[in-house]
Image (cartoon, each protein chain N blue to C red):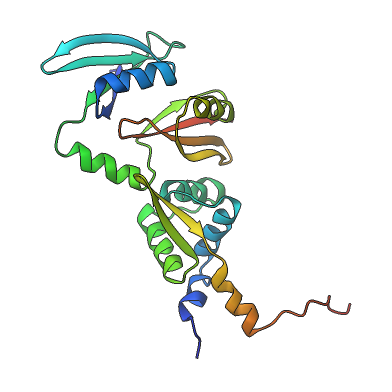
Length: 128
Length: 98
């Protein structure tokens, strides 16, 4: 068994695709109609055959309260790895991305947390 | 009688003092960031709920204020209440004789 897809709940798939590709730098992998939504995944250009991130519509009534409760406490449900958190924070801030936690040295790891504009906080991490 | 017994109770706990240290290091943190700093930097294994309760005690004493910004909630330190301690027991500004 292997992990091939992980998901984020997004409030608008088109907006999410723009953010995850234009700001974060991921590449669209699969985009097929699925009912009234799309099966829409992105991958990292560093690993195009690796784990796909599914941009899942958050229409289920439980998704909204779940997301907003996490965001209120600053909790990122999803994490992405980068080589240099400080540099990535500067790059994303230059693109207008909003952070709830600046790059923070926590000993074995440096982390930061940003708002994906689709209702989620995302953690950036680099192991030292 | 103490004017503010909550103040002395609040700073009488090591975890709460560490929370104040970390808010002094960087003011304005989410609950998540505070929990991360306590776990990763200080090896404190308190649950998120326990940290939330510590923050409530600090807020009750006026040492922490929360601010909602958009959909996030940030915690800020306020050292103002500590002034009542040095006013009650003034600090001699002269260095003590060796």
